[in-house]
Image 1 (tube, rainbow over the protein chains, first blue to last red):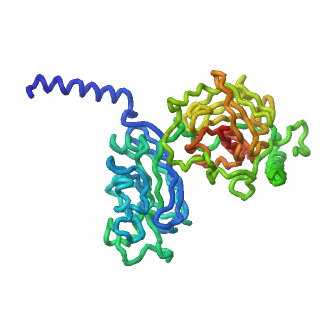
Image 2 (cartoon, rainbow over the protein chains, first blue to last red):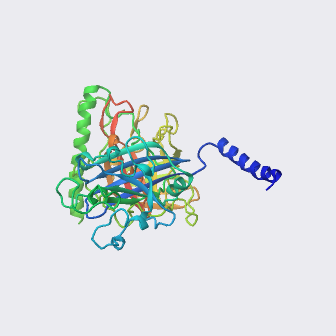
Length: 257
Length: 202
């Protein structure tokens, strides 16, 4: 290619980049997604995840419960173009040992593309950064992290509903720690309990164009009173009233049956 | 209920408190036939279901008949509410949610009360109970009927976003207003809870 041709090819490319820069960072992808995490490997872990994509930036909220308490739980966003974009099922248990390890789940959910660490790097390099994952005090994770940078392919995959959230760490023998003879398929220094998937959910595209944060401020309080003492008393009365209503409705519904 | 308070409307009715075992309804945690697992493919605004913008909501049980204004998200990601003025006491459809009649959770909110007129459009929302019917009118004249299947009270501080705004298999409604105790020291506004009515299309 001579210099002129090269210039002709690169010029439009440059102007496209310039255009994208002008239009802001929202060119990779935009959207909000959500997942219901369901138990895997006989764990009792369930949860929800919400991931918002804005350009190449992800914001992740993850809530899970029923996990082994006070032990690190690696959590990732998985994706591969050739994956099924699903959570694994019993048929993915290739070695037939009754459990699905992380590798066996890959045909369903793909590779680790984001490590949901609490601090520092979030790339696949941190796949087993055990000291930076949530340790689930009380068996619960309440995780929120923004400004997670991903490449265009991953941003698009998440926005398209093709990514999967997986939380790892299953205490098969219920002894309160990660142990056992079987070693992890990811790191032979760890027991497989530490890395096997505990719960999984596909990040489905939200039916909401945008999902509001938290509750709604739809009252001035004008009907609850104007004096503080009255307000507090009325608050209690309102609650009591609600309970009484509930009781009445239970009666009503019983008689309807 | 407002004993001892002069010239005071009674405190608005309140549904059972979520998570305290006082649920009197089908539990939105335990999906009914039209409630999704959250893994359905996106259907909002799908072209084969062209539904025009909602213009009116009618809930005969609690004597509500209100034109619908439109609200969006505020900069902090929370839902806008009708501002003081002519629209304050009207119900409002959130334009980031599906239109009522489309697949997904259409969100309609309204104030429980206001400084000027006292009780507002959704003052009695907490009185609704399962099987109560309501109607949304679309701009093109379509009348879309819904049936309540759950009424819940959620703390704003621990609002279950996915339970309320999560994907659904069918066309559903979420009616939202304020409720619960009134805390005058709360920075964002006094009511600590939201009343949420879950309804599905008939």
